[in-house]
Length: 327
Image (cartoon, rainbow, N blue to C red; front, side, top):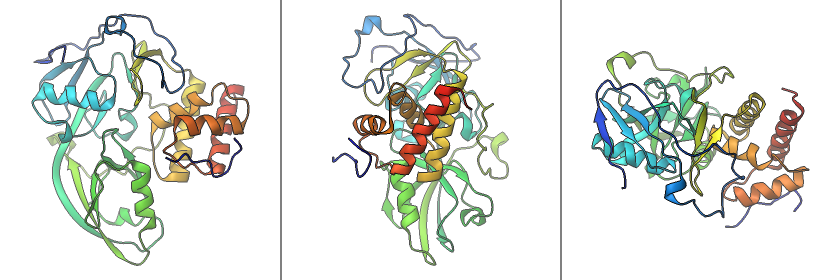
């Protein structure tokens, strides 16, 4: 199918809390690279799935919890909620190996086998009016994989940068009274972009609960940096929206650079950042021979997205650069 308007129509283990326990991980089974998307493959028997235990805390402070037996982000949130006697919707997002709101350490589609998970939960609600004096608001949006879109970055000197009550990490709950919980990040970015210029609009936000050592001037969000690596274990647990989670080898340096480049392209073209989506696109294009074949594979794997043709070509170019070691 050639490039063009090609968008598709469309509790077995008990968790418990432990104090001051050293981080550890128990793994069984071998690491293996999985097929792209993982769709269509029956999950392996429970006895053959890797047995992994992860340690977790609430980012604002809590005892240490132990969780296991999850295959995707929603199940992970459920396990964390059970461990701390809260409900899954109270969790806004998670970071790896830091309790701070470091946007470069967000939990995405992969967790290092020795990573420590910090859950950021709902804090203060706030409502703010914003005058859209320019076409671009200066926001980069991402989501938590379970229905919450939130602010990942605020551009210096932008419209939103002048509204000091809005901060990185804030969950966007409503736009002009319209509840957007459950709406994907790319749709939220489109809604904000389509708001009329020279008009005032209203945002209802929920900021993450903060510990005392996190009460500091608001962050603009960390700038992308290749040295910011998540995962210190010997491998990673890859969470998938379709199919079971799989244990994989750590990505190569070229693969990491390709994912970062595609994530940068997502921000440039669509106003979102999503390392899981970027990694899936790189994986889909790994064995494709030309852009048209890549476009068809994207349509099959990610049919809910309407990627611009120019974006697809640029992603294909980034994958080609990785193959040739041109980063």
